[in-house]
Image 1 (cartoon, rainbow, N blue to C red):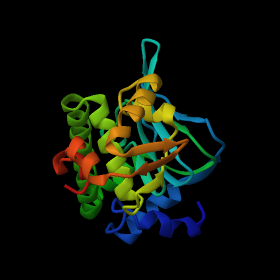
Image 2 (cartoon, rainbow, N blue to C red):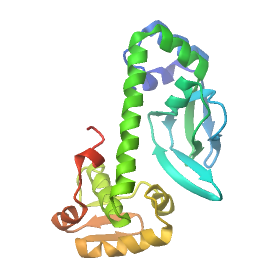
Image 3 (cartoon, rainbow, N blue to C red):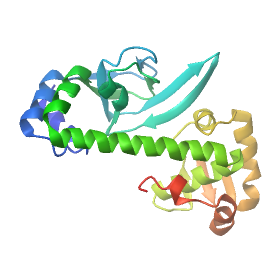
Length: 232
């Protein structure tokens, strides 16, 4: 792997404080690949041979069962996936495919586990990353189990508004079909849900969302930091 990629990876919390020698050991074992859109990178049930880092583009994590498919998450630069399978030396629980032309760093899982045993700072960072992922899963579960589909959509839009800088107009960063899957809805139900939010000041034009009555939407959605705040 080219040294020019090292700074991009080093800024991740996972690698930021590890010993330089150990970091270089991981980088020497790693390589970078460019993938076109809609390429399946990993398949659930297969051995976790690599820790993946998205340098550019985007990757969808998804799962299939009994003829159905669901979107679990969308990974954007610069982020790693799927760490738990790498550390545990266990099969992937999700599949992953590129959504756009993407550049991916692949770090052999056996090297990650070897450095985990040697570098305390790296091991601590892995534990913190896994704790963050666990808490994210709990928040997602609470969102799905405690809210109606309309409430889930309303809170999703409020979270996206914050990420867009708080503007009352912003673009959805995900296709509506995948958004429906992510929220546990069918595309038809998502379309009806957008219409049902109109009385609360939400209008949609393609992927452009406009929130005209912030107070009404927040009063309906009742955002909760223990569900919606990723920093909690």
